[in-house]
Image (tube, rainbow, N blue to C red; front, side, top):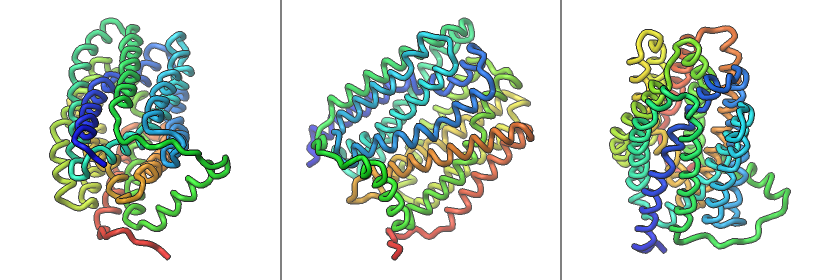
Length: 404
């Protein structure tokens, strides 16, 4: 039962998490650039970092199954994901090894993704359905607004003292861990711990159940395919962007942080309320179509980044706009599609699909880097996003369809 107290505590948890987690969320995307500029990482190591994202998604899927099958409570899932995600970086912070940072990033991504299903269940069991969009949007706006302030404070410092990036990196990691414990302390309506199944059940039932959900739910299946096609477009440029920006465009840390944090945050914050209202008023097909069109425009603007930095800044502003919609629908789709079922399974499928396209996309990007110029790869990225939008937009949304 959702009480006024549990609702209020959930909102406080959203606000605290949004403020404390953002510093690390702001600096983490710059890790490939730190590795290239400071630790002299090779191109293959940067591609490896991109390639390990799917592994993190698959591993987090099985960790999140512990929540779905109630072999661990929501509170403990969040605590352990925070601890393990932070511990992965401990060896790296004491060394100058690019490979150890890649290992730490992989562990961090595993447990950052793994705690999302638990957090969605917290929202579902402590906040009324009519307030899901507004509550989630509030957290996102606070996160990105905090990120702007953080970027302004640290961007000039990183340009003057490039080797000092480890300190904000460590502080952000510590604050993110503290946020997880505060969130867990504020949770009401925690799930009861029950004994999970055997090893065979834990390994194979999640995949079997996921395939069943994809087969029976036509709307959810079409949604996943649209994001798969459009998402591959974004994935193929992931190993290209750090190398292109660092070695060809020679973009400074301050300019990177302005693009990645301030420009992207402005696009995100300014349009999140619009996306929230749009999701309530229009169909999901129109919503997803506009998100993918936004990502296509982002790739198009990157074509002109070699001419002027303003094109780069505007590209990440548009990326922030598209990400605001993507962030909202990706997380809330589990709640929207699950209805009276546990949302963790649906979000787990989202995570697996991220892993699959993350495995395919960077591999394609890696091969393309040896034969095509970055502008041509950006053009291919745009094409994938447009195809994903066209695939889903004409689809007539209907209620869950069971395929016999």
